[in-house]
Length: 174
Image (cartoon, rainbow, N blue to C red; front, side, top):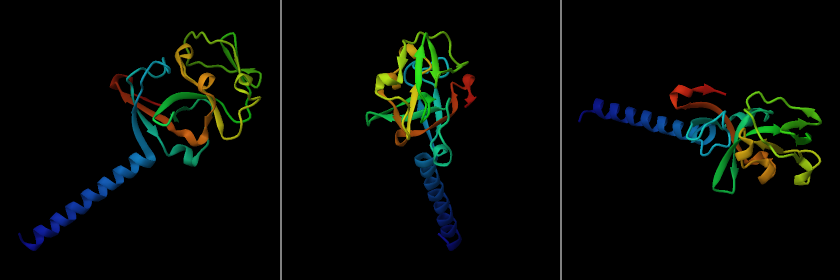
């Protein structure tokens, strides 16, 4: 091997290592690929949909009502739900309709839902405390959400769903 070949090998190796480190950084801090398990977000997300999760968004902006987020649950898994209640909100569900601070909240993304009546006071709160969020699945009668597991802490939020890329026929930016 001559010096030029060794130099090219070192240069290519450094590029490869740099690309690997960049990809690892992106997967740990910026994006993640995940798959929907279950029907709790139907019709918006279907069982087995493959998604890209934006893990960096909430480092630079606040959680908004309507965001679809992934958050840790029971240390070993995470759930995907829609943010309904923000800090300071009072949430109630009456006759299948969500009310936020006494005002009806229109949810155009839902099909017919059958949601039992609920009040945030059922969880022991008058309003959603600072640093916490009330989340619901879009498939209300088949969802493990804040009505059952309680409020989601801000520190447990992994990120926001950014893209559904599989199946390719249902590609969508969120």
